[in-house]
Amino acid sequence: MTTQDHATLWFLNGPNANLYGLDPNQPYGSENFASLQRRCEAKAAQLGVQLRFLQSNWEGQLIDWIQEARGVADAIIINAAGLTYTSVSILDALLMFPGKVVEVHMSNLWKREAFRHHSYISRAAHGIIAGLGADGYELAIEAAVRLVAASSGTTRHSG
Image (tube, rainbow, N blue to C red; front, side, top):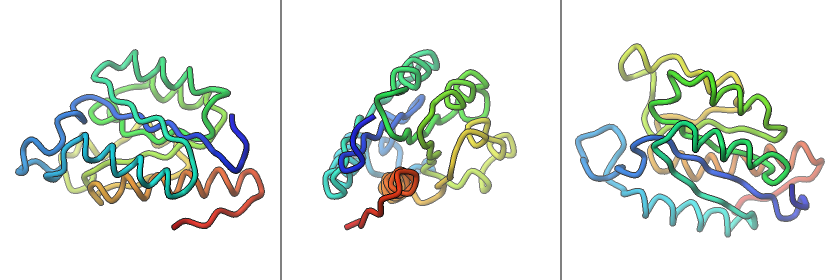
């Protein structure tokens, strides 16, 4: 972990997140993944924190990154995408992560199919942001920074 003045956040994206923006009729909006990454990097820079922004279509890779983040990252922000509803293994890895966890989703899960209404990830999350599209990604970064600051006894000012 880093000093409280320079928190480190890992932002993990699951399967198919790399396809955001390719089909504007989907519930994820029209902003592509590269643009989303740039927005997140700009927000992190604005807040004075380090951000590692990653995406994988493979469950095992996400678990490896969660394990690697132990002792390195102050918080994990995760959109496990379709693995949100199926992966006990990602949940277990997140439960062993000592820092803060923020779960984020582009779409409102509770306005979608019933199978999406249960998230295994939520049990490990300190908070959840869903349904706000790309703006939710920036809000998740702000939330993670505030959670880290609160746990270290400092107050950060966003923006």
